[in-house]
Amino acid sequence: MNDRPHRVELPVPAGTFAMMFSSTRRGARLARLLSVQRLDDWGIPYSSSASQTVALLVSELAANAVRHGHIPGRDFQLVLTLEPRRAPDDSAVVRVEVSDARSELRPRLSPPDGSEDEHGRGLLLVEALSTKWGVTERDVGKTVWCEIEVDGAGL
Image (cartoon, rainbow, N blue to C red):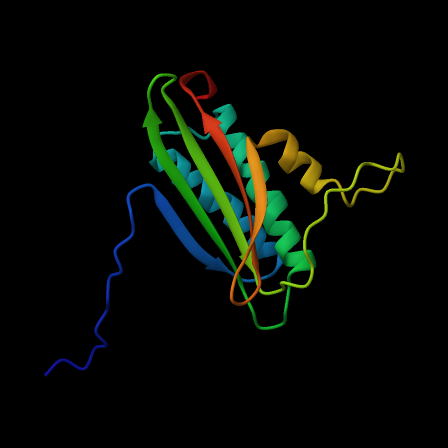
């Protein structure tokens, strides 16, 4: 008789990475590091502009989840999806999704006010660097997502 717990492998579509992280600065940093590792595994090298852009997007969305979406005892989730290259431009799409537990605090895009304040500019970066972005409601919390197109020139 085997006393070890049975491990169930859930099917994950190719080109998808999903993981929960502690809702801390350390969790946000780990999310960024693991996202560029996964991109490299998918053939998007660390040194590419696409990898650096995704790293920045993950950093901003994860930092927002930690700062504005934190509920004690609740983690945030990162999901990366790589949609395959498609003709005619041979581009692929990387989708970044960061989910947190607070639905009442929705992200707002606010224009810079000219001050030297370092806060409040993250979504401006997300808007500038991504092809599109948005917010999706969940049963508990919300998901902030963005997409970027990756072509051969960005690698």
